[in-house]
Length: 107
Image (cartoon, rainbow, N blue to C red; front, side):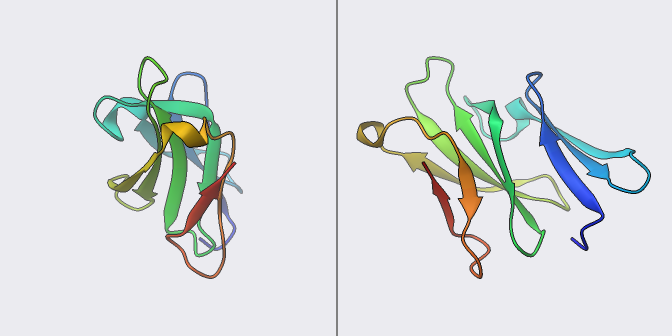
């Protein structure tokens, strides 16, 4: 990512990757295609420092299981999900900690 694209997520459970100069939507990733049995949380999204991975928050329909999904930006494939222990509670934010592009934290 050279800083010319950005991502958003809406309450329609769709991640959109936008071109910053043209304002055009480059790709759409629907929440149901990320991880089976999970829905996209529309307030948790972060780019990795190198721009190759998107982290997103996921939950099941009963909000009993929370996950963080790691998506390959080029293929829109979910390359990994990380389950959050119930006793930790629901995550509210997700962020990458440089310089490791696949290490995420949430709070």
